[in-house]
Image (cartoon, rainbow over all chains, first blue to last red; front, side, top):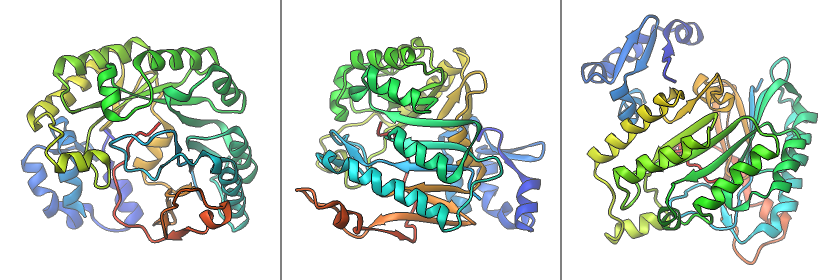
Length: 60
Length: 306
């Protein structure tokens, strides 16, 4: 959702560090301006919503 | 424990040219026995130990549907106070009497597949309704007492101009919807559009134009007071769909009915066909046996078929 992924909630649920798990995979999306961190959440930018499948694929 | 329940009703008067949902034309004779089998499946799921969260289901979503199935869902799982109960409705099949029955039967949200504001595009998509019928269905649903209504629109259609897309948005917004979903057309394998595309017979707007259509759509809805809460969905006054948000929150939801997907206990599973029912319609028993609970394949994109 536009509010993004609550990273603390994700880490509580999975017992792993999000950045350690996905930091490298998400780096191209960060550099391309498709995702951004807002407070404690990782969210798609307006540009990222157009390219969301590319972002999601990088996490699979 | 599940937060939401999705029930798939796979019968269509006519399959849209872009639709890759598990849907069947000309088999409505099976609708009644199918719904009885689905009610039994709801009951058996609960008897097998599946439970709703404390307080009952937050959402029940019908891809098609009847009040009697809702009664079974309520009896088996319970509905939370203020639960969202949605039915997808095709504007070509929505009479006032039927909408009244749904409203009186406990449905409180209706989602219409409007798709386009031009009859030429509706026809090209294989829709069974006209723009005038969409308007009438909308008015009937309001008259039946629905105060939480959504409409779907599509962009990136063959031959669609930016002006036509803007006109579709303007027309949709003039209905004063509480909720709007819009989607770019994608061409899925096995659809009539896929076949035509492979023959070079279905020119589509280029990526740049499709991207601009998305962006002007987001802006038009924002200007009209509909907040974008996820990629394709917009709502005013806190009417973001409970159903959609359950999926994004990754909480447990149960899908029942032919082709429906579930996510329960960290596992995704689907009701997948072991064979495709053929015409003439088989007996309900043999048709039902063509379905089994199976391991999921790749997730396919969701498309509005109502």
